[in-house]
Image (cartoon, rainbow over all chains, first blue to last red; front, side, top):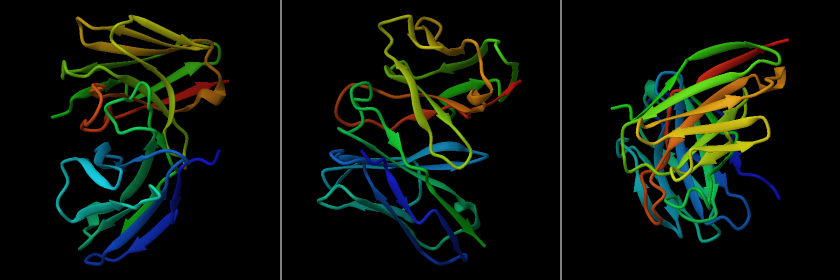
Length: 117
Length: 115
């Protein structure tokens, strides 16, 4: 079974631009979560989608948004990029929505490395 | 507010030794505690997880010890091997079914196993 696939692997953008990242979950998984990983803040929860609905959102500004499609694939968008948005963005999928972690653990992709200059 | 504190930040262990990483949490609503392993250029991979109704869980060379009263849990890697060199993250969440705030991660421990 293929794992979580994230595209692109690397991205370089200029401050003020916007960016869209893509995630294909493991086949059969219905929940997709996004995390930001930086050396200073570590791994931080962005949001979670289940059945095309945003279920939970972390403490990030409204410039960060996402959506999920009927085939469970998800996209994350960051508008008006800032230098501090440079990070590894990780997508994770699970069978069910989070809150059932033990029976539905998160499986992470290898991330998209975003650099904002 | 950091809800999961992980220590040490870095750890060097000789091959064959025991690696121990500790985590402490604040939110008593947490009831799911996984550990993830991350290699450079890769995403975190689930290693082992525990619920607070047990004090210990073992899978191969990896053991989680859980102390509910102290709100602490730890990962023990027995017979550590150079291939175990990676960054390890503890995490916690509310495993109550239906809606949660995602996983809260510790800051990570960079483990180096010296041959």
